[in-house]
Amino acid sequence: MIKKLLYTALLVTTAFIGCKKDGSVGPNGAKDDAAFTNYENSFLDGLWKLNPDWATSVGYHKYDSLLFVPDDKQRDKIVTYAKVQLDSLSRFDPTILSEANKIDYHLMQNQMESIEWTNQSLKAYEWDPSQYNVIGTFAYILNEHYEPLAKRLRNFYQKMANIPAYYKEAEKQVKNPVVELTNLAIEQHLGGVSVIEKDFADSLKKTNIPQAEQKQMLERARLSAEAIKGYAEWLKALKNDHPRSFRLGKELYEDKFKFNIQSAQTAQQIYNAAVERKKYVHHAMAQISKKLWPKYFGTKPMPADSLDLIAQVIDTLSSKHVAPDEFQSAIQNLIPKLTSFVTNKDLLTMDPTKPLVVRKEPGYMAGVAGASMSSPGPYDKDGNSYFNVGSLAGWPAEKAESYLREYNQYTLQILCIHEAIPGHYVQLIYANKAPSLIKSIFGNGAMIEGWAVYSEEMMLDNGYDSDSPEIRLMWYKWHLRSVCNTILDYGVHTQNMQKQDALKLLTHEAFQQQAEAEGKWKRVSVTSVQLDSYFTGYKEITNLREEYKKKMGDKYKLKDFNEKFLSYGSAPVKLIKDAMLAKEKDSSTGH
Image 1 (cartoon, rainbow, N blue to C red):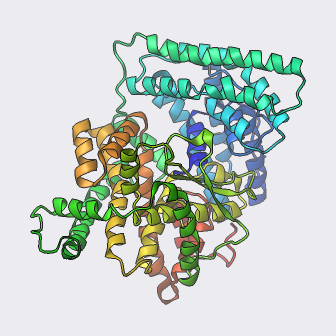
Image 2 (tube, rainbow, N blue to C red; image 1 turned 90 degrees about the horizontal axis):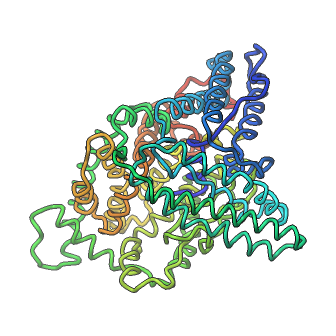
Image 3 (cartoon, helix red, strand yellow; image 1 turned 60 degrees about the vertical axis):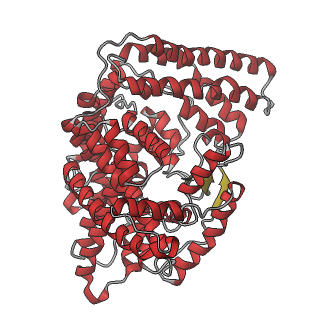
């Protein structure tokens, strides 16, 4: 997963937006690309002024010191703002815009319609107490070195002024909340309050801010921490006899899927495709496992049940893994191998001017070992890309062994393909070359995750470790995560799938460890739709490649497809498909 992008996506759904004072946003009747570009600029300026948290997360720091109280008035401004923007957009004819602007048009339209739906239909502000959480932005201001520390701390101080009012209002807004989301909110607030209570004070010691001013700043931090802990205590004590179910229900689920995933298909169609894909993958895994059985088990009788057969082979292969203290160095050593494979096979042009820094996961991100990508934001395109690697230091031997079996010598390679090369790192380098800020700001999670899943299979299909049927079997196991994420999420939120059936799906049919399956159950009970991103994006990209192949005939080259696809930025696959399969108007793509 990409932490910064997920954080941005969370802010997108909860952002508080208001209208410009004069209400005037948009074009003056002009319907050409130049007018649309001007409109985009005013659209973004208005957006950041009224969404300071979101602005901070994408690297726009003009409004870092602002925090808005999430009251009814603010919500009315959200809806008014969205309506004004939709009206402004309606004055353009997207069919005569360039391909790049046409995609931006649809992204902006979808985002504004999503804001209306979120506030008028979903109404999660009533039942999801975890929506009210200021800590993430404060952590970002503290830990990202985009401006001198003293300046960031003064913004931090000013922003804290509204924290008590923010949480008082949150208590008024929350009605019959979901139990699981209430528990999540308590856990996140009590776990994160140290950012305000301790980390801020530690940072102040490193500055030359006068002592009298520091004293004032620390007093505000104390009051802010009290308000945060007070909210958690209020939630603990809340009497809630008729809590809302965490299950979204079919109608809301389909709508949320439409806005968040932006697929050409419905959630149900994607779910049906995932069920079919699972059958195909099981068959393929059984064939490989039968071939590998004699190599690892000699003359021992093969299990009659194909899922038991696969599970036993996977269990044996999983014992091949690095030592706990070699986890990060193993990842570092894989990066050059993946880079040279991509270059030698001519799959993509790599950009050597954009280095990938493999680092130990910073303390403020810690909590789950593993790996994540932190990529530069839309306003900081020249920043570093970081591959964050969690440390296993201090883990009990049994826990570390279970974790390393999951990330064994085969899946560790697939993890690095997914997160780094040619997965997230490469895709986001290409996305940052696209001049449009809109595509980065409203980046489509299904395209981003879908590309990472697609790139794993593409590497294997082009001969990566081709003499190892073991890595293909382990890729199928890994791929079942994406497939079963969709089956799980749709099943739980629209078909009332129960916990025991969910755990059986994940452990027995997706060959996951019990602890991992339990973690996924928790995730599906506090999120919805995001788990569909991986398989939906993968499926749409592979389908598009087949259609593009037909269109190009003898001229088709995989590298051309990959680079053309990535050149559109982090746009929904259905919009990239329209652009790639359209008849060429001229030789320039305009993006």
